[in-house]
Length: 218
Ligand SMILES: Nc1ncnc2c1ncn2[C@@H]1O[C@H](COP(=O)(O)OP(=O)(O)O)[C@@H](O)[C@H]1O
Ligand SMILES: Cc1cn([C@H]2C[C@H](O)[C@@H](COP(=O)(O)OP(=O)(O)O)O2)c(=O)[nH]c1=O
Image 1 (tube, helix red, strand yellow):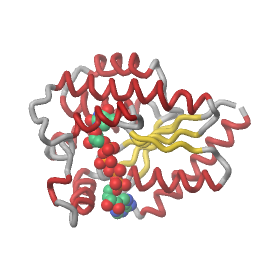
Image 2 (cartoon, protein in one colour):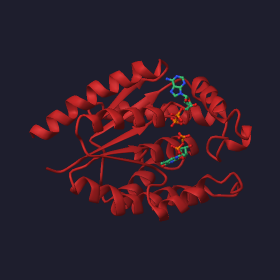
Image 3 (cartoon, rainbow, N blue to C red):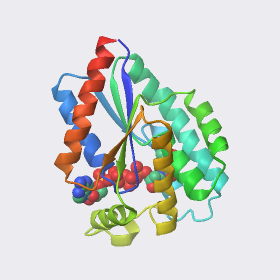
């Protein structure tokens, strides 16, 4: 039996990492073989590209370079880690994937959406998630959570290059995610993430258990 690929999307600070970890624990306890990974990152090469993309020092990065670096990081991640894990029957939970490039680079930056999609189709050899949990929160809430996460560390310095962009940019990103969800309602489940961690986790677990049962029986 082949594995399955599930992604988490949403604005920075929506609670993706928190929910992904919770789901991983729950379904591991149910006996599934789970791999947790993230983008940009997941492999040594991809992590090195991540640090170039997110470094607050790289303010001169062009939009073209940004699109291609995310795609390059993804190409390595898909072929080195994700596809072999799916082939080995694992449940792969990934923090962000191509939807993030569409939302952030196409809707956020204004890069042509078809261009972003076709570059990423090549990078991923057409891989798509079977289920995507879109954690949806108003921009004010996600930005507040980000500030809270940074507090007590090195304050603002802890925000990466993308997180430091303004309110308007993050509003366009949120609109982009809504557009993707409207186009693909079967794959993308919009989760109201402006609730307690436990409430959000319960919704995701119910859906994911059903998905895994159908997948195993099919
Ligand atoms: N449902 C929630 N309600 C309030 N705070 C939350 C919730 N989920 C996560 N957080 C907090 O918000 C911050 C961002 O969460 P995180 O999971 O890192 O988000 P993301 O991975 O989407 O950037 C963290 O400090 C986390 O503890
Ligand atoms: C995968 C991906 C991420 N990003 C951005 C979203 C985030 O601001 C940043 C890093 O992602 P991530 O580490 O998931 O940030 P967070 O956990 O704070 O949500 O990269 C893109 O702009 N395009 C992409 O294709």
